[in-house]
Structures are given as C-alpha cells and as structure tokens.
Image 1 (cartoon, rainbow, N blue to C red):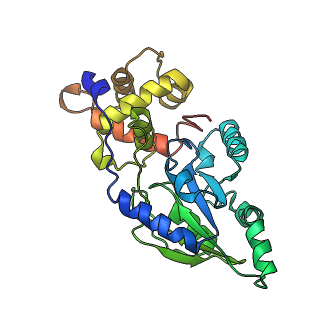
Image 2 (image 1 turned 180 degrees about the vertical axis):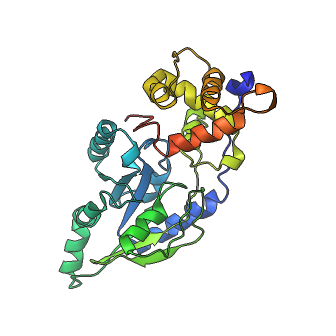
Image 3 (image 1 turned 30 degrees about the vertical axis):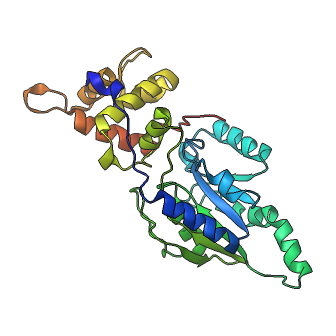
Length: 287
C-alpha cells in the first residue's frame, strides 16, 4: 500500500483521432454545440481541444450531476463560463432537474441563427445542436430526457456511445449525439485522478486501492468532515490514504481471514459511495 504515491492513473483515449475528425466534419451540419461536463470537475471533464475545434459556434455548457456538487461552486463555474461568452446551466440529467431551462437557453444562445433563418424566409427551421462530452458525463441521459424516450444507450460504465445519431427533441430542436472519448490533458496526474475518482475512466484500467487512497488524501485536506461524518472515524489532514482506508474498512467490518482488512472491498465501497454522492455534495475544483 505504501507505494501508491508513485503510481500514475492511466487512461486510454482509444479512437481519439477518429472522434476529433467526426466532430470537425459534423460542425458544418450544426448551428451550435452542447458540451456536458461533470459539475464536480468542470475543468478536468471538459475537452481541452474543443475551443480550437468549435471556434465561433455558439456553445452551451451543461454542468451535469449538479445534485452532488457544491451549489456555491457550481454558481462560480456558471459565472466563469458567462465571462467566456458561453451559456451554462446546472442540471441533473438522471432526474431531469434544470433541463426545463435548456430549450429557452438554446433559443437565446442561437438567437443570431434564428434571425438569419427568418431573414432568408426559413422561419421555424429546426436548430441543430451537436452534443459532446467525455464518457460518463451524461450525454445519453440528457438526450433521452429531452427526446422523451430511451433510444440513446445509457450505462454507468465509461464509453457506451459508439456512433452518430440524430434525435428530434421537439420545439424546433434536433440533437446530434457523438462518441464519448477521453482526451489527454497536459499529462496531468491530478486530472487523471479526478477523472478516475468520478468514474470517467474505466475501473478496469485503474487500481482502485491506489485510487481510493488518493481520494481519501484529497478529501482529508479539503473535506475531512465528509469522511468523518460518513464513516464515524477520527482523522487528520496529515494521515496517509491507506491509514484512513484501513480505519474505514475496520469500522465497516470488511475483514478477511486472520482479521486483516479487506482493502479491495473497502476501496470499491468508498469509490461507489463517493460517486453516488453519499459523502455529500463535493466539488473538487474551482474556476
């Protein structure tokens, strides 16, 4: 357990070049772009190349999973995007919270497109928007909610969407789904960790014990009450992750033969509970 600090969480972008090409080729078919990010890690879960690809197309950012992010932090992110000339809405795509604001926001963001269509005698022409986002940010859940059906594939696992699909969501708006692909960002270990903490990286390519130790060290320094309140243990900010994991495993009675702590079971439980919001509303980065 002591060597976990030396390890780097790995993720494998896979078909990055292909997805980048698909997004570029699709831009001419759409009037604007909808980007879904995880409200707990808006920076780490955004596509770093999107600015250069999208350029001047109108852009709407959906801060998904806002129900398990800190409201004050989400408000700061909305102001940040506003300062960058983008529209941003806090949403929870699984319950539909905040999505009633999407169509009014889309009409506002694309008002110049609507005016051009009217000037050309094409009033009422559907607005076409491309939906982008890394795996597990909620693209399919968003589309299903807006379309009122379950045609887009949904899963908790990273990387389910495989090909482009168009969806008519009514009120003059059509959405184009795109594959969800992870993009490397600055070879930054912290970014990799945050993506893994929130489940954007497949658990199969990470060491959950290492990951849970890092998560516990981050929370011990920034949100110690999240750990102490949930697991009823005493900790301090200087404790190592494996020490806290051991206390949690002991408290939960996760033991194997000989009375040893079952670190693997404890790590799986911790990651599941963090991702499910059971440790409270937590945002891991601010603008």
